[in-house]
Image (cartoon, rainbow, N blue to C red):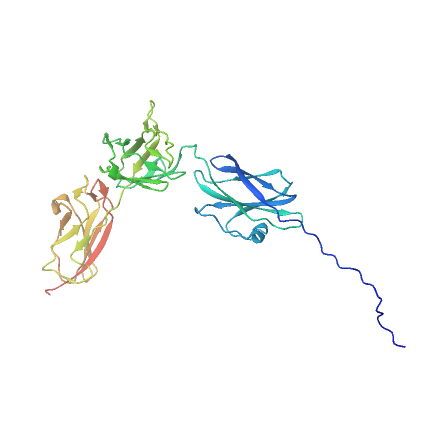
Amino acid sequence: MFGGLHACTDFDEYSSITVGSVPAVEITAGAIADSALTVNITNSGDGYVTAGIKVSDGTTPTVDSEAFVKQNEKGYVYATKDATKGEATTFTFKGLIQNQAYMVVAVGTNADGVPSDAATLEVTTGDSHAPSLVETNPTPSLTSALGEDGVLKLIFDEPVVFDDTKAIEFWYYFQDVSFMLDADSVTVAGNTVTLKPGTLPLNREIVFVSYEEGTFTDLTGNMVAAEESGLDEEGYTFGLYYRVVQKLFEPVTILPDSASEVSFVDFQSIELTYEENVRSNSSLAGITITYKDENGDTTTKVVTSGMVTINGTQVVIDLPLPAAEGQVIELDMEEKAFLIGNSNPSAAVSIQWDVVGIL
């Protein structure tokens, strides 16, 4: 007799699992500050709420709800909390930029993990604080290397706007010269202001910079505080003050050209040309010309003021002795032998020539 299934065998009936209905969420703005904001999110059922925030690009984002609750949508800072049906759940986001639009997205899930459609809200942070000067380049100091061109950079903690009806004053202490910058001398790029005075300071000058309240504002009009600089009653510096750095000037050209041989017939002087006008240092010390003959014997002569002619940017040094065939002639000039431009020192020079016969 065969065994098998009997037609009268009974099986348990299959019953489907009941999944909660798709929830819905609402999002409203709460407290808004300069660097933080709060939103209130209400879920239509018990479960969870996931919120995310990012800088807004001005458009409403398309959100994959399932990816969002798994925190897989890129660009957001996320947070997830338990939610009670009909009760607002509060989320606070900190460390934000003031006066910046942000997009907040919320997705709720029920107890079974079924996600809602995304709710979105664009919120702009406040801007109640004025910009602050956080840095200057160079740093205020009597040893700061302010360039010979006097250019100074002011760096604020947020983007600023320049009000060209306000005064920015430069004061050169030793020259006792003060003047206001014109609008063309001020350049603004984001949070950085570049000041370039039209009147150049002298070498080693002390420069003080001051400006009125409201000379700079943020994008909503909050005014930067006034900056006063100078000397107090006891003679101490305060505010924004800088020492102008020396700039060493190298000669632009030196003649004769040392890269080629020079005939003793043509070699009577040395000509140095600089970028700016030249004047003699008071001592004119530290310039020598050395002659070395074919036997290795050397003669060194000190250059005196009578051997030097200065004409604008050009310096001509007459040879103290006639050049001779077979010699090596060397010019050695110490730093600060001449003053260039605004009393800047000339750089040290050491150069030599091979002297030949008639070319």
